[in-house]
Length: 302
Image (cartoon, rainbow, N blue to C red):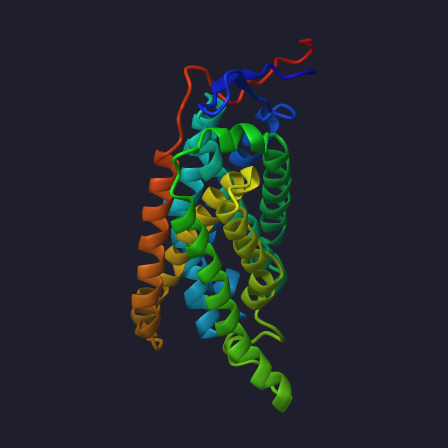
């Protein structure tokens, strides 16, 4: 099986730049749709049977889980389906945003599978995690960064690059101010203690994966490296989606009679709005050619 490259025009070169896809993107897009359907079904069950699904978790954890299920059902799952279908028709903007939604899904279902007691939805969550992870890896492998970068020659790379670097440094510092004093005193960090966990999975995933990726993508954009134009939209999309359940959680907590923690709402709202604005500006700089960047070969084609 081979893929048929489409052609884009780079204004700095006299020859068209082939927009190659390393291998067919179609399996990864359909895989993500399957993950979204399972995730939506799981969120419906979670919201309908909170006690059965989250009954052994702390109140703070349950509030966050309900908020996450609301956002999964109302925003993330529908977005994945729409973006995957749009990407299948050849939209690079949809494809890059889809990568961010898949990164968000992988991130959150690591937390679902490893931090919540095993229960009726455990295997469904494992399925979502596996499908999303393979879709994300395959989706990244299907893009040619050079071709993507050539379509963003007028992108606001410095604004986006510095934003990602600042976010990485800011949240890295914030998490370490919780972790380091706890380590020095032999205590469990407060964020983990509130969730009734030995460690906060957000700390682990952010410090090990997301924040280094955001910092690296920011540097790549500042250097005008093509890989930055693949990573940055996905990371901005991830950051946008991550802010939504955090913003919903205080309202859920208030409805359930728990301390709402309103203090987090203003800063997270600002970060989310800035992320959305930069994502729109970045994707608006895409010089869409006449043909699609994602050409999916039919089975058996040569």
